[in-house]
Image (cartoon, rainbow, N blue to C red; front, side, top):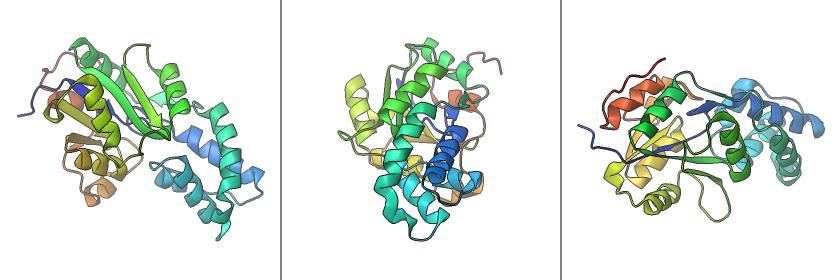
Length: 228
């Protein structure tokens, strides 16, 4: 039986919210500005999860062999475009708002740990969720190793004064699976995000959840009524 959780840490892209349109659009506009061939939305989906730099590196190479050598140029262009469009068509997954509000009412602290750049992560969360619902939103920054390093989770545990056994981490990709494993915290892997169930199982996901409301079964706080 799951221990009573005091802290739930969520990934952002593909877990809390569907942000694929903002990423795909920003990559598309970057390639267009560099006069490179477009890539598909499905390719962009596959490349998401390891931060902006890796996304651009893979997108450039998929666009044209050898184009990844232009990564510094691409990053400069992309950073401006994405900063202006990071919340483009972004929307909270169905049922997720009710779930995080339920967790909040149960006294469970909520945090976000994402490889999205910190500034844009905060901007998206501010648009999509009520202020104060999540106590911490941490995106990628120079002062912290990006996932799958366990550093972000370790620092959040320290900040909240919570033991590993009282933490639940929720993500949707192979990066999140490895992050949770490296941090040695209980991890749920969402099937509604940017990876298929088959991909997630192949990457070693232990506990898969098919709907946001399923998260409540693992917090030890009881299944308070959630309207879906």
